[in-house]
Length: 328
Ligand SMILES: NC(=O)c1ccc[n+]([C@@H]2O[C@H](COP(=O)([O-])OP(=O)(O)OC[C@H]3O[C@@H](n4cnc5c(N)ncnc54)[C@H](O)[C@@H]3O)[C@@H](O)[C@H]2O)c1
Image (cartoon, rainbow, N blue to C red; front, side, top):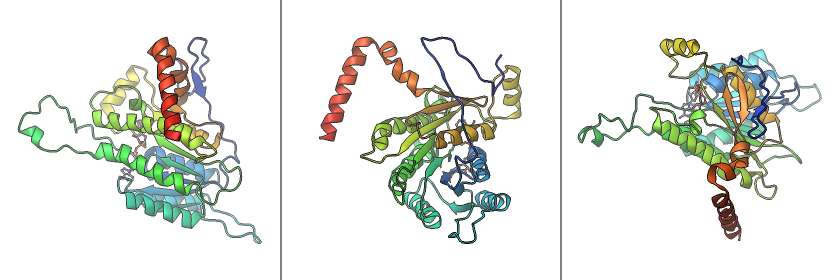
């Protein structure tokens, strides 16, 4: 078995896997302004600390005000900002603004606050998420009476509507106060369930597939220097130590089978690696056991094989026609 975090060399030239090794040099995040939506807990909180430690300025947006405010204070204390005596004052290392990602006005207020506080935003990361494992929309014990009660839509609104709101608003705010050549990006949190069936959490899974779809639909458009000139990527963690389903019983079974679990710090490291690599656009980093794999390139590269040669060609032709027609 390969130990988590070890490098894996892959020898199958037909389907080479692309392992992503985050390259976080000491200066890469220095003075960057990063907005982490959902940054009060879990992977987001690890990312906030990693960015602050690397001298970025971080705005935390989260619905959890006590944890968000405490984390921002901790970051200000641990990594104070030094301004040269003759230089204009630098913004704070970290601040917190409450936000409900499912409320458009609340997301707007968050961006307005971050922009006023830091004067620009370089990178936006959405780690906010929800999983209601006990809310099975398609429970086979539902009867004609029980089905009348409307189900919770929380997994859909937090995991998909929220990222849609953030992405829309970010696409405007990231364009402002942008120096020449400045790299700007949006990173959305999807999941292994964003591309692989996962039992019991259908609405969560539909939403995470939606996040993947959102990134795919925007990656050519956002990256165009004539349009937004922004990068957009997703992170697809598999089991991470913060997972709501990770009970002691499941943990024990998982460990017994030798299955990998990432730490939130490891997922944060991969995410920071995506933020600082300005060549990455339209990628999805699947993270398992602390290692990351880029999956989009292979899906694209092997399309003729999984779709079939003829449908692959006609689909490409039709998609090009649609693109030209809509651009006209
Ligand atoms: N932990 C895992 O195993 C795992 C696996 C795959 C994907 N993910 C995804 O990674 C992301 C981070 O996961 P995590 O385990 O750190 O989660 P977490 O629950 O620890 O943190 C999520 C954060 O989102 C915030 N949040 C929830 N609803 C919100 C709302 N309406 N508005 C604003 N903030 C809100 C929470 O307060 C919390 O701070 C999520 O999108 C999750 O779906 C996690």
